[in-house]
Length: 346
Image (cartoon, rainbow, N blue to C red; front, side):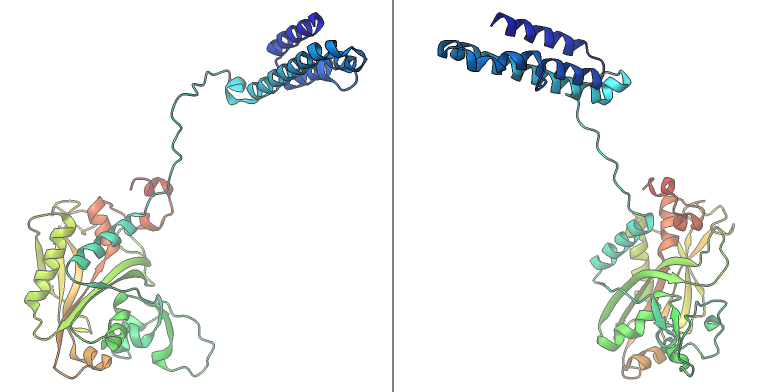
């Protein structure tokens, strides 16, 4: 019994002073090795002892073996811990470090906010096809067949394998979310209040305020006796809710769009420079924010509505532009840069 106690104390002292896992393994073999271990040799003598001696020495031998094994395992864990490798103290009672999580893209944040505002005004939110055809993208919206917007300099055409494909069936990447206007009208009857947020594509040069890939939100209302006054009121209420202002400064200028008559450009005072002039507003103090107007009767005809029965207005706002105004971003190209330093700010 005295030998077991001495071996236990010796093993614990050597384990305490060990400074590597290989040293710990040598100590294990020295005391608990299957053939030559010092404690193992004493355990191997137990069968030759009397019953009384076995009852006294057996439990003690097992306890000593267990204590040494536990000390060996604890020492290995301690040697492998980062604190031992760096020599720094680590307080295990401190709270854990929260892992970094992702950030929503600013355009996603703006899109969700725009949807919530319009839903509170009774609008339905629809999704649209990014790959469409010339019929829904242009022709059904009263664009002439020779309109320059259908030129490949503005529109991304998809190569068609069919040789004699009709003009209206040619596949293109949508140039605006207005491609869903007639498609939705074909399946739904007035009264309608709809917005269609989504990604658009145009083959144009990029600069601080223009991109070949951008995000837009089409909106329209169709009913009887809809007027320009309804258009102005709806858009001003949206802008006040979006920019969280009691009043907003806007102006209407005449604008031409084949699918509206009359057509307007709704300009909004530049939020980045406060109307003083900057690269985003091209030094004018105003940003062309929402092209809009009263829906052309030929568009209703394309949708199969009775002539002159309904009126309505349509508008298309750039979600990318809204994000620039909201967060003070001066270069539209940052949105598509993929730079995590930019995204992590939101």
